Amino acid sequence: MPETVLVTGGAGFIGSHTCVELLGHGHDVVVVDNHVNSSPEALDRIAKIAGRPLAGAYRADVRDRKALREVFSSHPVDAVIHFAAHKAVGESAARPVEYYDTNVAGTCALLAVMHEQRVHRLVFSSSCSVYGDAGTVPLTERSPVAPTNPYARTKLMCERILEDVCDHLPQLKVLALRYFNPVGAHPSGLLGEDPRGVPGNLMPYVAQVAVGRRAQLSVFGDDYPTPDGTGVRDYIHVMDVAEGHRVAVGHLDDRTGMRVFNLGTGTGTSVLQLVAAFGEVSGRPVPYRVAGRRAGDVAELVADPSAVAAAWDWATTRDLTAMCRDAWRFQELHPDGYSCRPPRAGGPTTGESPCG
Ligand code: UD1
Image 1: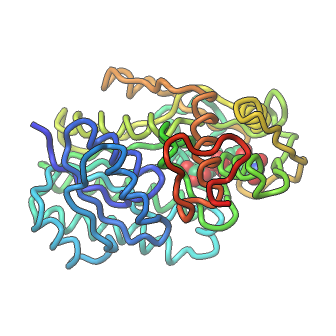
Image 2: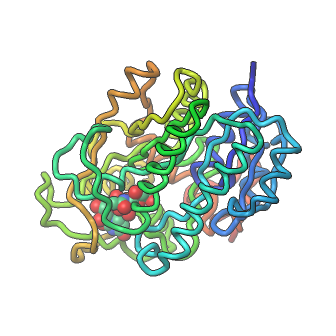
Image 3: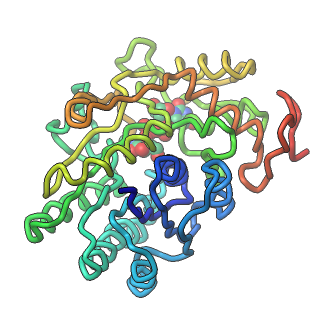
């Protein structure tokens, strides 16, 4: 039976793509989002791509138990996917209280209301950042954890809380997914990553340079012990991340308790390899200069994705070319993000701004 899934943070980058994937597989989807770092416009795009509406969309904060109770009372929620959180590493050091409050207290509020409402199935959005400066790659779920910033610590703390709550509530089923580096966009070009202000992450920055919004990329260090000296990461297409969540919902009932899985591809890509791939796909070479290392960065983070493959008989399918192509399509159609509406079908070709 298709289920009703409540998606917190459903208007955000990963949340919005996951909603499309869930609707496309027959689920009813209810979104809770406070839109502090997402656009309500994404909700219209979700319905447009899926060809059917969300079952409900609420502007609410996950820390607001009263608001959550009202949402649960209005829909027959079978499972929850909890994305709603702050996620910028640098900002987390500048505003730790806000990060702990939203990410940790928000998760506690959600768990309390879920229990009250007798909903005991949860997919939790965790992060590869919990591994910290791991040293040995690829990383398995048994690799040691050693988060290096407040953001990563909030995610690890939530995992610990979920373990404790699972020990206390035998009926609870939790899957925590540690994503590596989600990038790309929906292939329609209607949904994508729309960071507020200067992008902190590599792919959106590269895309904004390619579209002419920023002059050049700063490559943070070329003296790492990697083949070309630049940082290596496991980039994963956001549609693969979305598919992973939909598949996870189908595996929540495999057993009770808490399980943790990596969500990555197992392939490492350096900064310069990504810059080259993006330039080729977009036809716009991306100017860059080598700058110093960024504080807190590590040389290499790559997943061992074999646990998910064994447990769910599922693997990612989209490669770096698809990630760059889809990120570029969204960027080209939305040079200024969601504030610029997409053109009608048959709209502009490369170089023309639909906002212009
Ligand atoms: C960080 C988080 C990760 C989170 C991800 C997306 C850590 C250790 N990692 O990943 O949990 O999922 O953000 O929010 O907390 N780079 C440049 N120039 C730039 C930007 C980045 O050279 O302008 C380089 C970085 O040095 C790094 C690579 O590109 O080598 C990827 O950086 P980024 O996209 O910011 O992701 P992470 O820091 O790996």
